[in-house]
Amino acid sequence: MPLDRERIVTGTIALADEGRLEAVSLRKVAARLDAGPMRLYGYISTKEELFDLMGDEVHAEILPEEQPGDWREALRVLAQPH
Image: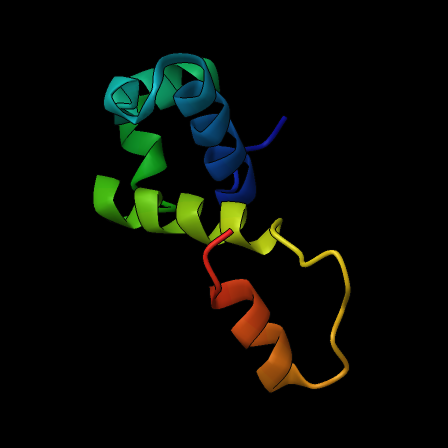
């Protein structure tokens, strides 16, 4: 399977799910994806950027039970502590 940013982020999230965020390294992500660590740098610049992309992906999956019609209300609902 070809390497791309989405696959890298998905693999990193799976690795973090298994061993916590502290267990994530670019070397381990690359091994999970059967790629050399340097190949990841063609898609991401730093480990911090990868963590930002992971956060974006996870947050995109969070949806309120009811979808408000107004975008401002939708953001307010998402921002409330659960």
